[in-house]
Length: 80
Image (cartoon, rainbow, N blue to C red; front, top):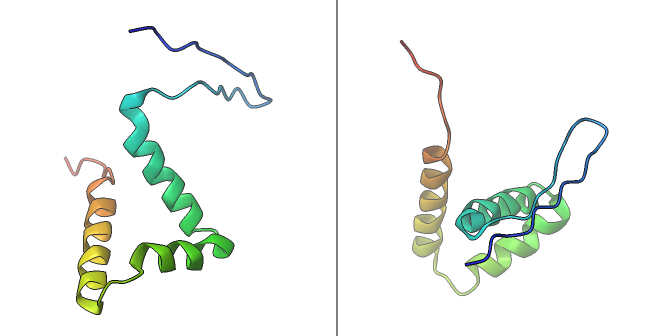
């Protein structure tokens, strides 16, 4: 399997952009969803499409799963 070509673009604040790798796909898709849901212009359309055709119980179950996944992805400082 060929290695992805690395492209670095230097920016004013030492930020580098590189191509993503397949292993990062789920994390990047989740990041895009969170970013889009934070944009009021995108939020309603995304939620309508995501929940279209579901009954209220299924919507509730999906919302709980989304919240649980979001909480599980957080990192907390050690209490020790």
